[in-house]
Image (tube, rainbow, N blue to C red; front, top):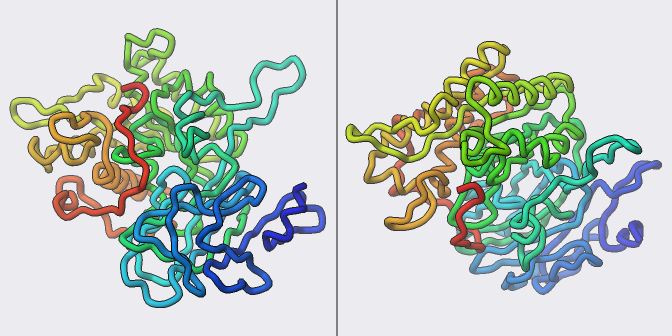
Length: 431
């Protein structure tokens, strides 16, 4: 069955390879070249076909492209791994900028009019290498209900399924050609954290982890394993850390931002005290990363939007930010003080404008979880922190990242990011 797909895909394999490693698609009404698969505007994704547009797309075909007046998603069934994606936009000069997101709204390309773009997408599933006979453990990440049923049509969310999904946004996205190539041995940034870090699957929420790929060249992958409601303890118990460690290799990175949920004494099963068990569990993550030759990076928890009478941000995390800093010094680990950077950002915006960096509307703006603007600005704080720590990955920061000062944020009034089609009014787990 696996090799029956050869007629639909251009498959490049080695003599002993068991799975395809590259796919080429040409879009439009005319027959594609012999080394590519033709995809017309009415090609809907199915598991048997293994590629196509996700349901809800309304597209029109030209000879060598498809386009729409609203966002659309295209998927290809691929094994888990890192992929270099090459996209040709339109079959002539673009009349409007196109924004490309991958999987669950990971920002890959922002408002481009370039005819050709490349970026890296990390694809994963929930499988974990099974433990030996009679050994403890499991063979799957323990997904929550929203991950299991939070995707299109009540399916798995897009960052846990068996497809590579690309989202094309803007006033009139136009797609001409697509090549997907599996790449080995790329350095990978793995991210562990909670709802302020995760790939939020639907508008209007967003988190800094899903904005991070925007700021790196296609020589490095970002694998965001953070999830809403998670804690250090649950990340281990649910085999999320095991999943990361099963793929981690020398030269990779592990970014860790926990605290929002760990500090909740009302959650007795996962509560950790700042200077004892909180630091102890972080030491486990650090040691496991180092054991595999990866570089750990500690990040203090992003602040909540809570102003005092002097229009300064209250530290709602107690001793936890200081505990992260102290542990980083003790362990000789790279440290990003996101607690301080986020406070500076909110104070620069002020009590009137700071809510515009958070999810929701009107009086119901979430004080914890960000929207696209807030996630975008916080991600830039993280990139500044990565560069300031003189890590090797700094050489992969995108040339158009010119730095960022949270005391002088991008004007919220003029910020635009092409919206994704899906929306929800559910608050994130753990809220």
